[in-house]
Image 1 (tube, one colour):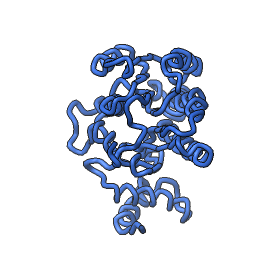
Image 2 (spheres, helix red, strand yellow):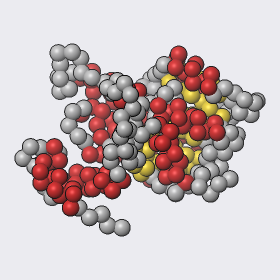
Image 3 (cartoon, rainbow, N blue to C red):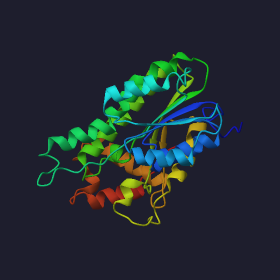
Image 4 (cartoon, helix red, strand yellow):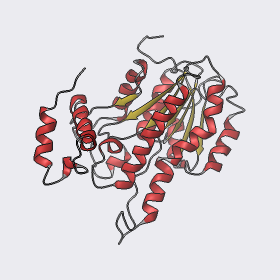
Length: 293
């Protein structure tokens, strides 16, 4: 096995992927199958799941694909998933990739601040959809104390730098970052064989982006590029896997995140990077910022 590959990607291991019918989830499923893994594909789009399964069929009795249309925000759906997968995967899940997400808009005629359902629907999928998965499968994953295993949670740069425009989405992804950090801390001593990773994609041409761009923008990465970067970060043992893209370098990401943190540290107003009276100072400060080793 290549030393540049995380050992969870191995023949016979089992990957459970939410949001698996398209985008980064589907690209990850394809990557896992390349390395001989069993696939449990989870999505709320049954037709898209069927299409995904047709491209990633079971190949042998020991390399299988199953599909499960569920609502990740519903704990009982997760329990049903656990019940249906345990007989065929009695040793549990080796890779749990919590990736399903949505970008909800406020009800017509309302704003983000006057539509409670906008927040409720967003956090139900983007945050509780993750904690439901952890609650359902974590005991099974940690029961094996020797096999290399991994949990990946898909976050967002919007959950770190918090740009204006979609407060529910930003809040849901900020919560995912916090949950991933806490989970990593909880497992690292007693269950060192179960790694936790926070994937933070850059500008990626997924279904959410396709709503606004019929063709892939030059600056956007393909989902397959994100998965390659994820694999490299996991092999290096990184928790924070923050992807660049064709528009933003890793260095610029770091400076932007450090500036956002500086709003707290230096007592500046919230979100100075976007405020009209701070925007020029912020841009200059980010440009001149030095990142230490």
